[in-house]
Image (cartoon, rainbow, N blue to C red; front, top):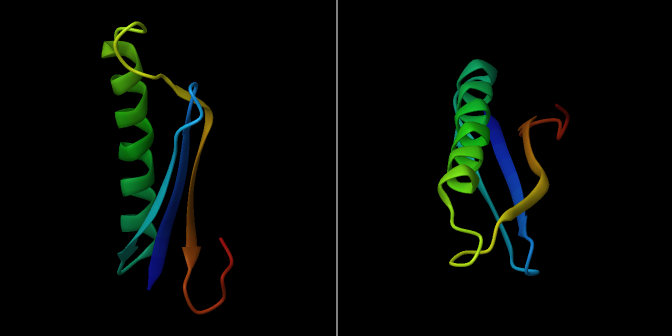
Length: 70
């Protein structure tokens, strides 16, 4: 079992984090890549005057639940 952990910070100081479980490393890595693409798309579509931008770097990691290691 693998867990994807994420931490996003906005340029205005907002913070969000979470996790999701996956049955394999490949599934976790695929989700990690998609989430990374999603955060870029949100930033590209955002009007800086309307929404806070996601601060880089976005932290998204896949770890093995049994060992706690990537």
